[in-house]
Every structure is written in structure tokens, then in C-alpha cells.
Image (cartoon, rainbow, N blue to C red):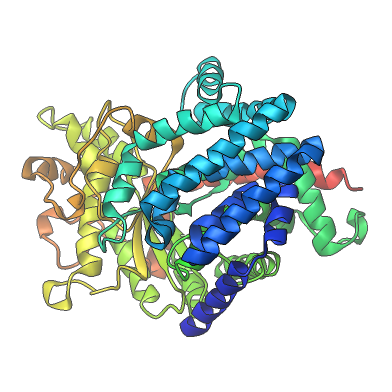
Length: 562
């Protein structure tokens, strides 16, 4: 099955590599400027790249004066994305080895030179594009945690009044990012941590830094819908009409639960398309987007399986090939059952609601027999560290308050050793390319972000916009393989005074002094206790609450069809 998936991915890659100049121009005219720009970063050999690049720019220059205002704006947008991409991490994935740095520099000058020339021919088109970019950047900066006033001011400054100004100013910001520096330094190294965007939007900027993954969950889906409700309402109605035909609810097979699946699917699909070329180029090793199944069904394996299969089939049809989607299942007994079934079908999975070594080990054993190209086991660092902090604050006054910062870090290091060490050393000897640890829910402690700095080398880290901003506020020189470092003894001893930490860390065979009062498992006997364990209970409660909020919005959309 894995070989069949890889063959299908290769076939799609080679088919897309054959895009003609006419097809690329059509992509630009239809507003798919980002994907057209990405074509030049993931496809083509040396000679064909140069021919496509120069021919396309020549045709755009010729057609621009007679194009309508919308197409002019789209051409400017394409040249903006192309120019930025040529000086971003994207140029290092394939292009650097294909044409070399000197040719890349020359291509950048050609692209931004044409952008300067064309934006001067139609200042209105340039202004319209800048206004759109300012709106997007404002939303991004708000997501990064600044006030609306500050976000608007920052966006206006970085964009300016010409797309060419935006290119140069944004590239300066990209080149100063610690994530960009990490991506360049660790590219093609086996211990490299894949970077992921812990949000449902602003993926393109993240990709320029080197991110090749995006996660979503009910709160994130709701955030995306809230940012542009009318757009997503229209998209959902169009999707329902396209897939189910009838505009009349009474004669449509769609129900509220399935409509919520579609409301999530359309957000995920948008990101899948943006990461599609990276997924194809990597032959399914990178470029995934997470889709979280209905959290209300966390105890119903069959319901989770049914939803995943429904969405997988929809995305396979809409994307035209193996979907670059990874389904989030809960780290529960029912989630384990669902993972066994879906993994054997070759579907990528990401285990969420996961905080503990005992959960990770059980899912890792299931993933050993999975037919998926890659799957992920989450450690929700901050959602563990904060409850541990609160618990320790009620105890010994001698406890260092900074010890709790390392709760998620130490659990991650412990799981890392258990998953990837040899059998002789007590590990499962897993393939880290096929089964990856994924760290999420990161927390900021002043200038310190140990959920990043102390676990470099973990499989994947998904980073919320505010954490990305905080990490980039100062230059950092963290150990690029800190995942194997030892947590200080004093901090570990403090952590072991927390019952929550002991539950998260310990499994049979570990020191008895770290054993929790009642060691939980994923057996049927512990199902209820696992769901009542504080980090899982609190996180699941939020997921269900935001899913219910999404249901209210979707219900209103469905009502508008009657």
C-alpha cells in the first residue's frame, strides 16, 4: 500500500511538472498566484526552469497593458509571491540545487524589476493589492498578540504603498527570523525538526520561513471562520451545492454534523492546496494539514472512523490525488481503536489530547503496523506545564517556579527516548521518519520559550503566531539537538513532586519514586479516569465548546438554504 501511495504521489508530481506556460498564466488569471509561484520552487530541471521563467515573465509584461484591472492585480500578486519566494527558504528546497545561487539572484532581480515596471503602469492595481496585503497582515499581527491599532500600524509600515516595497521589507523580516535561520542550517539533516503553523491561516508567510505543516483543531477552525465569516459561509454553501446538489435542505442528504465536517474541510483544503507541491516533492514525507474529528465523538471509534473516511474521500476527489491530510484522533481507548483501523488503510493520523508516555507508547505500537507514509504523536506541552505549575504552587515553598516550565519538555524527552532508542536500550526502535513526535500548545515565559529551545530535534513543532513572534524578538543560538539533553536533576526532582507530572512521565520499568498514585492506561477499565484526568478533561472541554460554537454558525448557514 505504501508503495502504491508513493507511486500515485510521483505520478501527480510529474503531471504537475508538465504544466505549460498557458496553464501557468491561467492560474494567475484565476487568482491562484501562490500556487503558480510555487511551481518555480518545486518543479522543473535547469534548462526547463529558465525557459519557463523567462517566457512567463515576457508574456506577463506583454499582456499586462491590455489586461483588465483584476488580472493586473493578480499579475502583480504573482510577481510579489515569486520575488519573495526567490529569496525565502522555498528557494533552497529544490531551486538552489537546480540553477544555483547566482541564477536565483538574477531571477529575483528580473522578477522584482518587472514588478516595479508593471506597478508603475497601474497605480490603482498596485494600491488595491497593497490594501489586500495590509488587511491580511493586520489579521496576522493581531493573531500574534498585538492590539488592532498596533497591528494596523505595523501592517501599513511593512507593506508600504507599492508591492515592490512590501517584497523588500518583508524579506528583511524573513531573513532576521530565527526560524528561517534554523531552516537553512538544518535543511536535509536527519535530526531536523519540521516546523508547523499552529493556526488555520497565514500559512504562506510560515512557508517562506521554512514551515511545511499546518495543524487545526476546533478552536482554530472557529478563529478562521470568525476572521472572514461571510467568505466561509459562501464557501460552505458552494461546497454543499457542489457535492450534494440540492440547495433545498429538505431534499439534501446533508445534516448538521456532516455540515460541520465540511466547514472544517474547506479550511483544511485551502491549506492542503498551498502545501500540495511540498507534499508531492517530498513524496508524502512533509506538507500535511491536520483535520480534527468531532471531539464530541471521542468515545465512539466507529463515528471517528466514518468521519475520517468521509473527509478523506472528499479531499481525494477535490485535490485529485492522495490527500495531504493527517486526521487528529484523541489519545483515548476509542482513539486507539480508530487508529488501528485507519492506519491499516494508509491514512495519516495525528494523536491529540496526548500528554503522557503511556498514551504515546500505545499509539506508537499501533503505528508500527500502519500503512500510512507518516503519522504523528502529539505532546501538548503547555497544557501540561500550566496544571503542573498550579499543582506545585500549592506544595513545597522550596520548589523553583521555573521547574514547571520543563514539564512538557521532560515528558517529550522521555517519550523520545522510549520511541527511538534501540530495544537493547529499552526503546521501540521506531523509524523517526515514519512516526514523529509533534509538540504543540507551546508557552512563553518572559524571554524564554523552552517548549522550543529545549526540544530541537523532536520530529515536529507546531508554533502559534504569538509564540513565533516572541521567539523572533531576539536572536537565539539554541542547541539544534537539545531533545537529547538531560533535564537538570533539581528541576526533575521538583517535577516529581507533582502527581500530574508523574502520571504524564511514568510507565512500567521507570523508577518507582516517579510512579503516580494510580497509574492510568488506555485499557477499557481506565477509560473514564483518563477522560477525567485534568489536562485531558480541560482540553477536551475547550475543544467541545468551540465545536459547539462552530455548530451554531453552521446551523445558521444551513438555515439560510431553506
